[in-house]
Image (cartoon, rainbow, N blue to C red; front, side):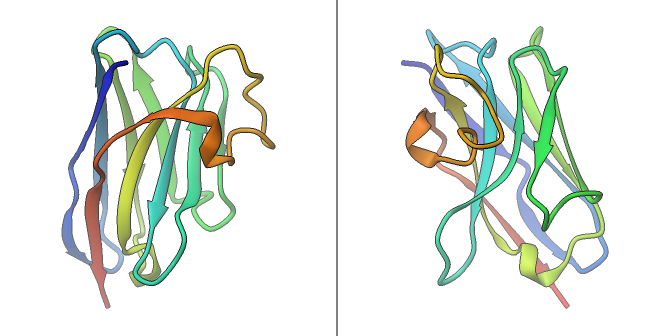
Amino acid sequence: QGQVVESGGGLLQAGGSLRLSCTVSGRTGTTYDMGWFRQGPGKEREFVSGINWNGANTYYADAVKGRFTISRDNTKNTVDLQMNSLKPEDTAVYYCAVFNPGLPFTIATMTRQHEYHSWGQGTQVTVSS
């Protein structure tokens, strides 16, 4: 399996912006559908955003729609998450994951954590008020 590594987290004030990056290496590659999840303090991990293999289709949780943008560059094996207008409730560890190939990447399936087979270690984002 490939290795998934997130980067770009940090501490910032509400209203600010941050760009997270996910790099996938090894056999997994980056021509698969990908997703971003997050886990806030005392909360369960939740779906944030998904992007299909060629970047033509993107999806967002309602909580981040209009503020976050997911993108990918398959030549660099990266999937990025641009986060604008950050709020204290966006504070969480953000994870990138590779969706299982061969499964349909739909709004229903992409939110299911068990449909992803490779996860990064996460990157911390802390937004102060």
